[in-house]
Each structure stands twice: as C-alpha cells, then as structure tokens.
Length: 259
Image (tube, rainbow, N blue to C red; front, side, top):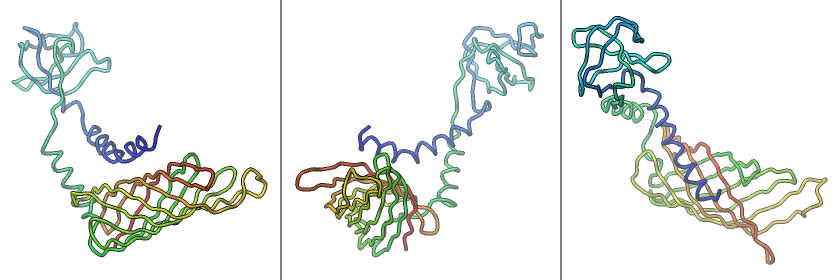
C-alpha cells in the first residue's frame, strides 16, 4: 500500500466514523414495506398457522414495527390500529432517512463539539501526535505560527524507535491550507531538515550519523471547542547521502492547540 492510499484512508476516517454513528440510529421503525403481491394476508403471529386478521393490496406502504427472529415475517400496523404479520417474501423493504433528525444531529455537533476553523491570522499552534514511521513507532512535536489563514510555518521535532535503534527527524515545514475555512481543513506541507540515526549498543549494522532530510505530504485538521483540533498528518520522508537514498512513510494522528 503506497503512501497516497494511506493518506486517503487516514483522511476519510472521520467521515466513516460519522457514517457509522448515523447507521447505528437506524432501527426497524425506519423501514417501510411496500406490498408486492395482489393480496397479502395479515396474520396474528409470525406464521402461516396464525389467524388471518385481514389483507393488504399491491402497492400499499406500511411501517415495519418488528421482524421475526428468522427474518421471514414483518409486523405492520393496519389502518384501524391493529398490528399483524406479513410474509417477508411478499413485501419490499426500504429505509427512510429522517432528514430532520440528521440536520439536528449536525447542528448539535456544530454547537457542542466542533469549533471554528483552526486557521487564522497571526495564530500560534502547538501539536503533539503519535503514529508510525514505516513499521516503527513514531511521535512528533510541532510548534508553528500562521501569519495568514492560507499558510503557516512549523518547526518539527520527532523520533521513531525500532529494533535496531532510533531515528530522530527535525526541521521546518511550510503548511498550505485549503478552503473552505470551516471545522474541517485539508492542507499540504513541504519541508526539510536533518535525520540522526542512533543505533542500539548491541547493534553493529549501521553507525551513528546525521544526514539531510526532505519531506512532503499533507493531512487534515478537525476543529473542536476550546481551541483544540484533531490533526492527521501523512508525509513521504527522504533521507539521503552522497551514495544512497532512503524513503519512508510517516503517519501521525494527534491533538493541536491553537491560540
């Protein structure tokens, strides 16, 4: 899986989470049943041996109140207030989305959870994040200043730890933000600095040394209340010497404070 695919998966995680929450709100009462047969018997219980209470005709739509454990029968409410069961093979179920409830949920999120855009003029920012540098654990600290809502400058100090030793990355980045200036802000970043490798004492596979480093990528910021934001970063990191070049993928998720 390349770094672009990882960035896509990382950036869409927020939307997937919100979709799962919405899906969890669906229940049997959100399902409507359209009668597909000319005349369908409505019975007192979920089975053909129960008393017939009446019949419903083709094209009529009823709300599903319940479904039998085996899924073979739906319980519906008839016009006169009596509920009964119809065979699932003779009706077509479909879901109805309550647009009003969805809008209210979005309004509640904006009022109680989400904040204004984390991008502003003349703002300082501090971020702490953890994740992975290729297959090794990785954490990073960022200190930045945004002279404009369109871009910011950030200082980076980070470190990864692997089986052979640790790798420290440090440098500066230019972060360019994209609109609209709402709670969710995508951005691109490019920068450079240095990388220092510190092998374990028992390791003799590589020596301690410092090399130039370049990085490029992007991410997403989701603003919360109180000046905090969830931040997700993905970078392609290149460490090079006169003879060799090493490429790595850094994925980070954490918290950012803007003030």
